[in-house]
Image (spheres, rainbow, N blue to C red):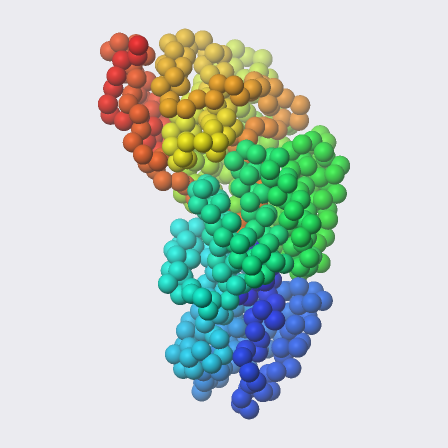
Length: 544
């Protein structure tokens, strides 16, 4: 496996010792002239990270590009290409990283056909496949990434090196987490933790980071903090590992309102990424600095930094970072009362969700847009404009709320489902009901309340502030229903993708709040159209 440091966002580094460079045994006479490149490559990596090792790696690749290349040369070519994949991703060129990884897999496959297992080429090929899956997920192609990882199942056995076992489980956990398949993600992260504790204890910190991210995404910040503290205490594998831990802890600190402590961690993370030779992650981590500026009310500076980082991550092709940057920019523009520009930023964030199939994330963005519309209505001096913005908020919030309620069916009954209801669906309905109240739509309010009463699971005890309170102060929408721009990144983080459209089983029947009246079905149909989830079945029953 080329990336010995499977850090968040799919970023990683390579380690010549783990790669087995120059492979099993000594090189034959034909290739002995490249041996000095291995020492140069390792020294460059140790002093400056993956990017610093690029010149030596490219010379190694060039040495193998001869017409009469043999099996050993193909093996060396595969190793060089695999490292160049890690380097390209660290530079922020995800598409080049995928190309290098694909070429590495092809070279290794040809080498195995020529020389079999003599140089353990299979391990390099499997590592390149895992790393390609990480990068595919980074640019929003998580379905392909999952297919790649599932295809590796048949090739893993008792002879597979522990590092590869760990890498596959940890990468799978990150992808499943961002697809919000939380139960499956937990299984994968715990398998990664088991492999690490049994064979490679130094890697346990990454599994704990993944479990911390899972706890955070499912509404348990206390457990998230505990897991991340364990992860940080175990970090002993270099500046990139420490930087990822610092960044994750900074996000938790910022959520708690500990702005000074968060800023310190964000700055440490950025420096760690730069020192470790990972400029892509350094760039993304600067979104944390922009969030700190927003929290302090320095809106112009926050906006400028968010726009610069947004341009960087757009060029890099990191779709998850694009989503974060646009969401943050929208929050800043709301705080500046620049509501049309804010909605444009939120729409760009939504477009990222749609392009990756993450319609559940689009629903969360739409609730955020609804909060902004309600805030705009409160700020307006004109009655007609107030009503227009309240209507816009309702048209955004209610279909999104219906969808988030239906999506709770993905979870088995238990605490995880209840956290989803409390932190996502309940808040979405709160925003929708506030819009309905502002418009004095009494009949619609009755329909929504009846809909909630017919839902299989409701957490009525969850406290919730009003939408205006959530958007007050610095204007930042502060509820867990919407992925904060700094939602914790799991180790081996991937881009988002939607849960199954079925939402986890047959939906309940439609309940007529008023006898013979099925007008509320229009809202349900619109929700199903926008978000691809079954909200209610065709069966209809009357309310009691």
